[in-house]
Amino acid sequence: MNYLAHSFLTFSDGQIVGQFLEDFIRNKDRYSFPKDIQDGITMHRAVDTFTDSHPAIHEAKKVFSPLVRLYAGAFVDVAMDYFVANDLSLHSLAEWKAHSLRVYRVLNEHEEWLPENFKKMLVKMEEDDWLYNYREDRGIKFSMRNVLNKAKYLEPDIPVFEAFLKNKSFLQECYHDFFPDLLAHAKGINTLIQLDHK
Image 1 (cartoon, helix red, strand yellow):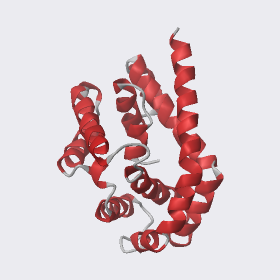
Image 2 (cartoon, helix red, strand yellow; image 1 turned 180 degrees about the vertical axis):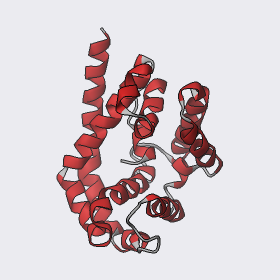
Image 3 (cartoon, helix red, strand yellow; image 1 turned 180 degrees about the horizontal axis):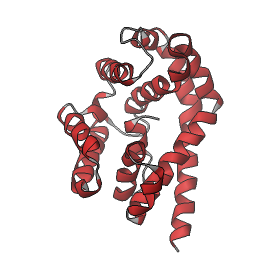
């Protein structure tokens, strides 16, 4: 899952921070954070593990794997954010906008815990409102270009966005087969986290 989905699958401000930090920290550093941020790191890992093993995600990867092979999962993650952002059964557009603003506020309020490379990215994320704009094709195109630019072994002109557009209906079916299961799983993980606090 990508940034929007991870931020949505949270149950506290601390979990929001932890969900974002997971990709920016070393494993051995996770216990240096407050417990609620550690909970977000735990949630992020649980979400990723569940996602990687889901049959619908395996199907979705087939859209991108001929183009990018082992990087297919990264592009599926980005594609899923498009469908999350457009899922009005989860939030109205106004609620998605409010969610995005809340995430930026929470991350800025916890600036002391953010590594420098994440702080720099957060400025761009907030300026261009990445989270809300994942609902637009242009937002997904921008995000997929970022993945291509960061990947060591991929050429920047691989037509992954074109593959997304061509297979949007199929990817949406994969999303609908997958995301309710992920949401239920995240709620279950949060229940275990809360029990662990007692």
